[in-house]
Image (tube, rainbow, N blue to C red):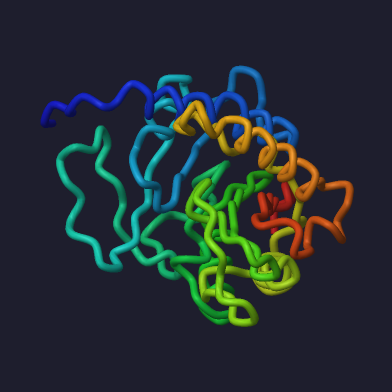
Length: 242
């Protein structure tokens, strides 16, 4: 395998921080972490491999799945070559991953039919007792933060196709695909704000406090409303054998 190019230390640190302080505590809250047992993970459509690499360093197995849409073949820069496949038709065995996560589900799956098909495929490859974490932009909100902490006003009244409603996602994953449960999680700590210029850190802090208020799981009406620009949703598969 070719030698990997050097990665910016700050990007690697940010990926590790997100895994350690946000993803793994969330997974532990969903009772998926068992001491001494490695997770089998799949990261869908990431910008890079840094989060997967950090999970491997922690002793977990982690693959990467990329969409073939508008994409050249994977470059040799990957530590472990990713799968390239349509999310709605995956060349992967059934029940092979404990944890699947993505911030690109809406971008790769426009429309209810497509979302149902991809949700069914994610259920098929999800191991019993495992789950899928989606970071998904909220179509009810005029703010779109699904691409990261860059704020942009959407077209009022005509949400972009990559956004979704909470009810629509629950229908696709629980009602249609057959996941056992949908869990709501807050956005506190999701955005690290590590690259915010020093002069804007006060703004970033205020925004972090606002997101913590808007995305409170114990306030489901507020969570689903226009106040909350993004969902962090856990879709759990039943541990029972079908």
